[in-house]
Image (tube, rainbow, N blue to C red; front, top):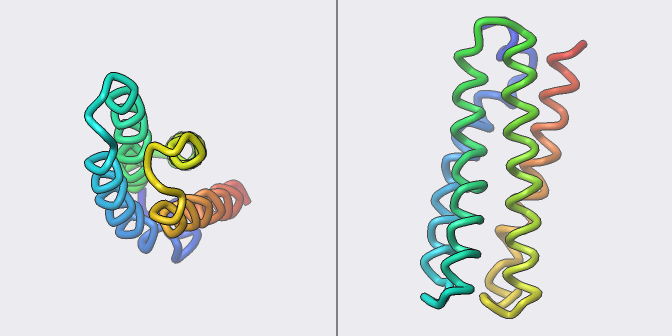
Length: 123
């Protein structure tokens, strides 16, 4: 939907940003040890971390403002979930927190950008 997605210039940037973020999440998942516990963490962070960009892409194709906002809200929820899993992975010592510092910062920034896009789209 052209009009809703143009409410902020951030929506075009966020599609690329979330794609790059998904690639970083894939790298983190690959670094998780191949244990029963590790498999669970890897699957969870992969699911939520790659879903963010997919929902942003769906928002770009929304047929209404309401659908655009709904998809952006889903993307934001997935970003918050990813932030949770990344923090848990680090705090549990599965992947060193030092290695996760930048991706945690990026996840937080993505949540903030998606929040701003949603607020802009609603107004």
